[in-house]
Image (cartoon, rainbow, N blue to C red):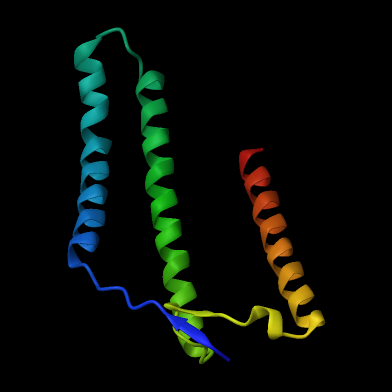
Length: 122
C-alpha cells in the first residue's frame, strides 16, 4: 500500500495560542457581566446570562473537540494503524465491498452526529 507522508513541523506557538484563547474566554466569563451591568444599570441578570451562555457553549465546544481529538489519537496509536500524518493513496485498489463499507460507515457516523445535534437542540 502506498502512503503519502505529511511531516508537519510542530509549532509550540500553536498550543500557546490555544491556551491564550482559553484564558481570554475564562477572563471574559467573569468580566462580561460586570461590564454589562456598569454600562447599563437597567440590565437584569437574564440579559447578562445570554452572553454567558454563548461563551459557555464556545468553551464546551472547544473542550469537546480537544477531547475527541485526544481520544482519536489514542485509538489510532493503540490499533497499530499508520500515523495520522500519512494518507492512503490507493483507495481504489480496495475491494468493492470494502469501499462500500467505508462509505456506509462514514454516512452512519454523519447521520448519528446529525441526530445527536438535533437531540441536543430540542
